[in-house]
Picture 1 (cartoon, rainbow, N blue to C red):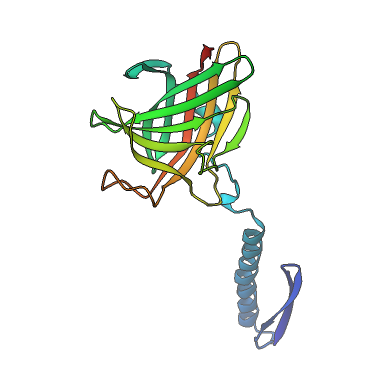
Picture 2 (cartoon, helix red, strand yellow):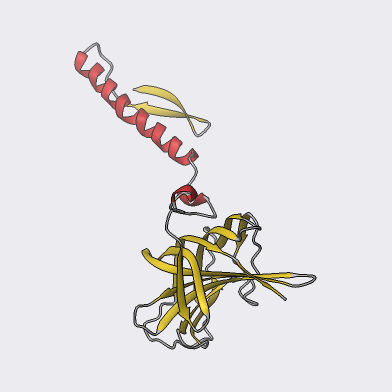
Length: 235
């Protein structure tokens, strides 16, 4: 019997190999191949244990910031007096959707109220979805979406294009290691240019009845991109 002492997970582990020790080249080759197999496996297991998990980042984005702000600015009339300037997109349940951003800043004597909304069309000529970040701070940083009661941080609704009544309401952020968040990349106060990223994962409230039978219980938007110009309203 041959005993090998190996340091594993900061502990000394005795690995016993039952091998007939002779001067036979065959047995020596057998010992060599056993060590060749066991030692890398132990090393890989230790490295895997020490390595950070892929989902350890609470604010995940699939694409780097410097790669996403390259599209051409568009001006699109959505409905009534709603005009979108710039471009936006996100992966909605793993599928990329084109979005239309609208950002406003109501400037009063003693306060400023900012609002950021992204719309997308369902393609039926009637229904549209919107993600809204009310009372947004237009300054560089990451802001978690977590206030589900007052809907102060953000929510997602499905509405009729030519009406304001919501058909479906998603306002409860899913509790998971990856957060729902809005990330302001930059904001130019003089020109109003705003760059942002986002990831939101919302649940429908159990007390709300579904208007559309096929509406999912939860909706995930990830790798979101927003590039727009903030429209300033002086009051």
